[in-house]
Picture 1: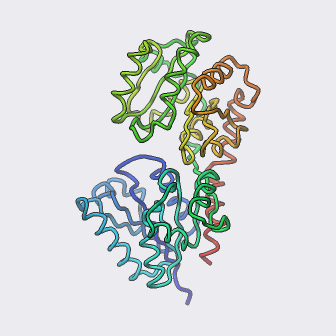
Picture 2 (picture 1 turned 180 degrees about the vertical axis):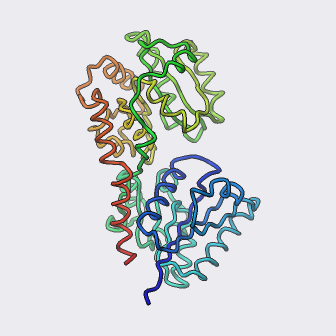
Length: 382
């Protein structure tokens, strides 16, 4: 009799916070569940509590789910580590997939104890400049590392002296059903006192000091230059966080109150409307691991501007799907945005919404993501 396939998926959280790692983890869980419907799948969540998981029970139906979110810090980390070890020894998974590299040292311990193979997912800044010796060793001993971009892959291999053969790329994905091409929503134009002829630039980002690299500072610097040529240009930043007060000071000091809107937190349900409101999605970042927001904007048929120094290069397919610029040069950013908004950029694809969406779906949609996951897991699961 064939033994059932046991798969462990270790995730920081799915519900109690929202970011690139959480979104990626959700899509990976969906792909594994679809590919191996008869496997014994165990999902272990560090920061989600049982209560919040129960509120999302449909999402995790028929999956063995273990939570540590109700344990107070710093004991949560210890409890979570012991839980991972205990579950793995009891269930003997064929493969462990950890969607945050910080969990990889526990996987290494289990590999030494019971021979379990493991895959670590590398996203962005958490994978760079690693100094912890145990984490270094756990990555060097991983059976496979999946990086969300070539930028993260190349940097990880260089800094940690890991063979490129061990580090493969699994780009972020998006659910194309959640994003569509629509006219500018009238209710948002009214809400923010905008006209249909306003040239609207949009950034979606958490507003925290650690994520200033997203480029909203450079865009604020660029706005006066942009407005000299396009007086009706307006910049909207969607997101909330502790950096908002500093941003408000910059807006006030540079007399940008009439052309910059801080929209604050916007739910996923309403975010599509903001993409459709804009004429350009711009996030000239320089330390982005990939940037799912680029894909969401592309799926709404919008021209997209990204930085040329990080994972945005992958998301925009080296400039085929959008425009890449120097994220440190606000003048170059301004000139490029003016070009795009006036319809003069040489990349004609950015002005073809339906084709732009189609190419994004084919390249980064769920079907392609699932196929790539299948190819990688087939090495370990028979």
